[in-house]
Image 1 (tube, rainbow, N blue to C red):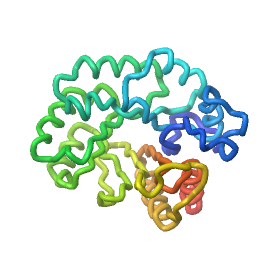
Image 2: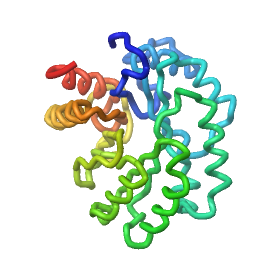
Image 3: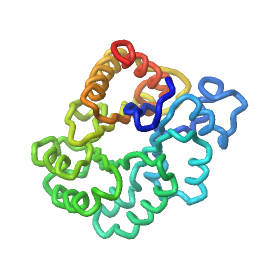
Length: 259
């Protein structure tokens, strides 16, 4: 990656997580240990999506260690804890939200968007007013992105609400959701997710060919950049089998027809 100031970087592309033993001797050195993974990772990519925060708010010492191990222009995109999104469904969760924000603040300028990911039971009709209230109350706290996994949300009132609160719609490539492009903020988040059943384990190699899909996404991302959006792109292992290879291929495809 060419050297540039952080203010000039508009494409942030990396993987969903970094703590995978299957990457040893493939992406990490054979003798790498878990406490050195992030440092090795940050030599290749300048952003990562943190999936572990979905399962609970991390300790301050953990987040401070993430900050120390990464370069100054590194960006962490964190998933909001499921206690907030799945268990409390955005209601009566002010204490948890504020604790989470305090932890995020320990990343200082390395803190990227926060992803509010919802499951397939989170439907439009009962939850639209609840999500709207949450965004109305908290859209100024951080850059927020919403990922929905039920088709009922794909309608204009939802998109208009996201635009009103400058919240990004996560563009997810998930096998049972329509793959679409809708921009609702000055940034966007792309998540390449795949199908857990197709690749339940062994993340050491590419196991599914997705050249056409990656070419399509490369074209979309080039378009986003031409429109001066800031773009965050993350692939998990289950998209092809080995997320670092997916990201490397996608980045090459993006660069083929543009800087």
